[in-house]
Image (cartoon, rainbow, N blue to C red):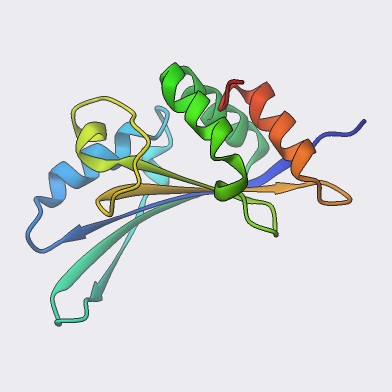
Length: 150
C-alpha cells in the first residue's frame, strides 16, 4: 500500500492593530522549527473597517523542511490534542486532501501548543497527495508522523 505524501505546508496568522506585532511574531515563530523563521513573509492589508492588519505567512515546500517541520510539530503537540485531532479528522480534512489545524496564538506566545476552535489562532494547512486521493492513506500518514493518536 502506498502512502500519502505532503506537498506543502502553509502557516498563517494575523496581527490586528490592537495587537503587539512583536508578540504575534513571537507566537508565530514558536510554531516554526529553528532556521525556518527566515521564510516568514508579511503582508499589510486593510480590514473591513479600514484598520491595518498584518498577515504573517510561511509556505514550506522542500521535502527536507516538510519532514523537519512535521517532526517538530508532533514532538511538541500534547497527547490530548493528538487524540482530539484523530477524533476530528473527518472535519479537519477537505476533499482536496488539505488538513486544517488551528493553534491558539496566546498559548503559542507562552511557549505551548494547543489546538483551538477560536478566532485568535495560527492556522496551518497541510496538503497531502495520494493517488487515488484516500482519506485512509492521509490518516495513516498523520498517524505515522505522530500528529494524531488513536
